[in-house]
Image (cartoon, rainbow, N blue to C red; front, side, top):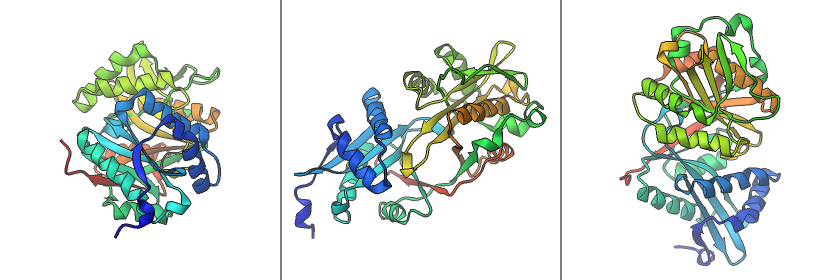
Length: 340
């Protein structure tokens, strides 16, 4: 039977005025304030409302819980629309009273209305409370592995990176994105015969063409959205383009993450890396990643993370060569039967 304490709680869309309440609850969970990160997540939802689902649970005292999720339309080479749960928190006095279930039910209904095929998220295997929450909501381990790499260990190595890449190295990676424009960042680098620089709006048509040749799909909407995000908020994305003889040979998309999935330290998340098949085995992917490592080191971001499906052995092998190892984080998925 439902507890009487639950009756005053209502679930609604998260509003800008909820920022202070979300920050306070999050600080109680994490032990420190992450106001700037949370503020950026709310701003991103206002900028692209169709790509975000953010809910608040409230009672007579104000906000008691929140759940923030984002639509995935092409990250990590996936097709179809999925939802990534990024942040969830419940006020200490409301835990164990069904608040999380109410928030999740609201998210599930939203997913059904927006043709979402599955929900995804991540958690540290040590976060037992979050693992239990996911288990109770029907999540299972995804057929994918979270890989990570320490940035400092990937300084440019002429012996390794100026050499021609193997077929697996440049032929396997389907996509990835990164984009900040500090004075000394994203300098043009002639590495492995590739001129690597910050991605610009003028690169979009060539990026879409390469992505179509690699994936066999037209993902211009997804790529345009990610590039616009990189240009609008360079603190969140760090995106690179590589040219050889003036022609776009490859691109990389990533974002700086300051708190998704309960992370307590900044990390760069590699979403997409694409190399023109005609430019394979020319060291383009290595040049892109190595320039990314150099830029992130300048930004004092010490770790890069990405997700690789278990059947993409070639991409996993390439990332291993570049220094990626299995993370202590686990990937979870929950298929949705009510997707349109």
